Image (cartoon, rainbow over all chains, first blue to last red; front, side, top):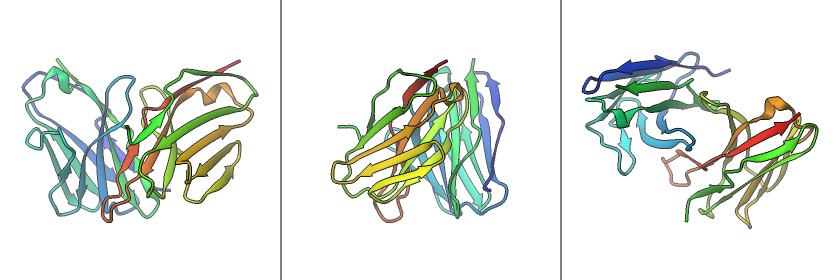
Length: 113
Length: 113
């Protein structure tokens, strides 16, 4: 089956620093990677869509300069939260689209203090 | 009008009974529909997907789709305490090249032993 590895699972950082979240498809090629954010007791909100080798497409209201997405290969995509602030604390989840459909990573709990 | 709507619950069902979860969507052209289960603090896991009108069964789960009414539901038979989770309905985008999933807010289901 399709597996997506997402790291780290939890991260605590100081306000103003940057955090990189990595998402890797282990046994398939992900043509498209989706990045979601989920606040407590809310649903998944799509932040951006990225295709390998091209710029990410951001949803309305998502700051592209703050949430940097790199999709350098068909198996790896990264999300960097730059100059993180407490309001960026959330659960970030990637989803890779491939032959098997949509496969979600295990999520990253980001806490900015 | 939200693109995908679900009753947020909580929905409480006795163990062994049938749990019925409902979802409506606004884009009449939508073709693909997904049900995910999400435990607290975890990422969503796929239960079922459905493309065609009618019923689709997989074990204790049955998805029902009515495109004319823009309605999709999930039935869980012989509910178990382990079924207690938030259930997310998702609809795939209809624009060519835009295959993002739009999620509903989720229904929190509690199975009472």
